[in-house]
Amino acid sequence: MTTDNKERNRNERKLKEKIKRIDQRIEDYLEQLDEQDAAEAEQPTVDPSAIEEALKRLKKN
Image 1 (tube, one colour):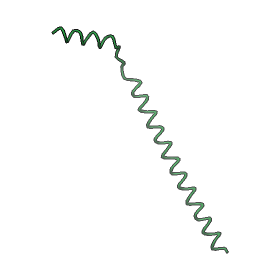
Image 2 (spheres, one colour):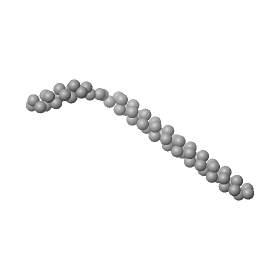
Image 3 (cartoon, helix red, strand yellow):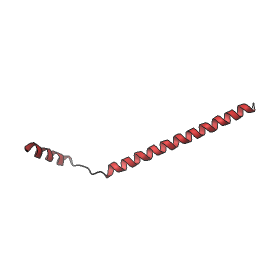
Image 4 (tube, helix red, strand yellow):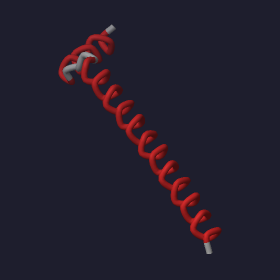
């Protein structure tokens, strides 16, 4: 009977550790996404009308 309890406790501990590692990986991944979103937001935006004007100039040449 005590062997069953020890085994159950060991399995429960392993499961908790695994959940903790998975939670950490998820947190790391979400942080990476936030960093990438911030980096994308810093990039200059291009005005669509400016692109159209540039294309018109290129077509004329």
